[in-house]
Image (tube, rainbow, N blue to C red; front, top):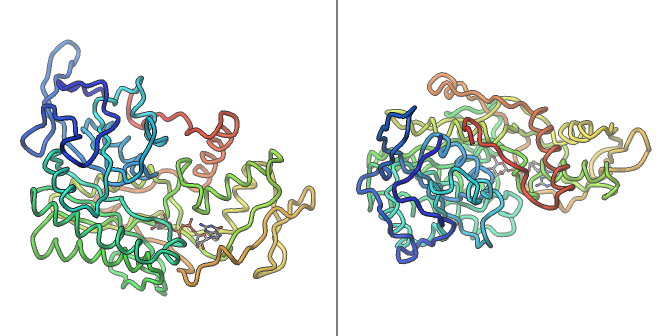
Length: 405
Ligand code: GDD
């Protein structure tokens, strides 16, 4: 796919939410994008690409979603809270000079808590789909920063919805909800109908956002939906999440760059999928005629301890666990060295013991199911980590799935 915009511009790397900074070229007047001319074996055809806005675009999931939307011919606008130099690492492959998608992507900087700026952004971009992935995403951090978490996660979605109501009620909204809303539930696996029972500031804020979506959908007839996302990982995962922390440690220990890794709750069970699979479901959720919420999960659950075992195995190290509680250690079977320890500073005051989701509804209504299993996920993460070790702290080369680019 190669969308060549008639408003082709060589620089789309940065703009801000304030309209005066947004490149003021030929914006479409409806909720679709600029008209493009596309060559098809010599016969010129005119198509009108859809315009999507991804809030939180520089995160792991935002970057995969951007890849997917671009491969489908969308014009993609992304909003990030962060500042960056040149361009954010996770979007390097989209924004670099050699990218075939460079002119189809526009990065904006701003904050979803700035309502007026959000309205101006929506008016300017004229998206037909908005994906809200913008928020503080660490459950652990939410115990230390509960108020800022509630603001970005909980209040942020009210701003987004109110801005949609102000600008164009026809805009479809995807909200990233979370398996954390089920918290202390005793129902396994969880379904869309499972009663929530949040047990962290993050989970409470996510539930607030989740219910705000339902409330606005029912009260105003908006097309607003929540994907209840279970843990989704990849080589682009941030270093503070347990999968990336474990894989990075395993690779570094293998190369003699680190002696051991300290972890928190090894008994915790999570339903780990691949972010690249999950964004497909998110997109499908906005293509239905009627808005529906969905569980987005693999249906398989593993302990953190099992993830440690698999990740070390992937780098050629067999781990044996001994003792229990805070005394538990993981031994390198070949050398007898302690390579895993428990450090209570990584424990949380409370958390779900087990998350596991039932995505039957997504399978039946969206024909969605995950394609990448845990072994493949770990292999990809290990390979990427090895690559980063060799080439410096850079994102691995990316090929956008489904594109010829
Ligand atoms: N981060 C971290 N660091 N977690 C650890 C550690 C550690 O050293 N040791 C054990 N864990 C355990 C946590 O207690 C938790 O049970 C599990 O590993 C996973 O932790 P995270 O990777 O931090 O993810 P999360 O489950 O808390 O939340 C993620 O998934 C949610 C559901 O999709 C985040 O991405 C959330 O934003 C998301 O909503």
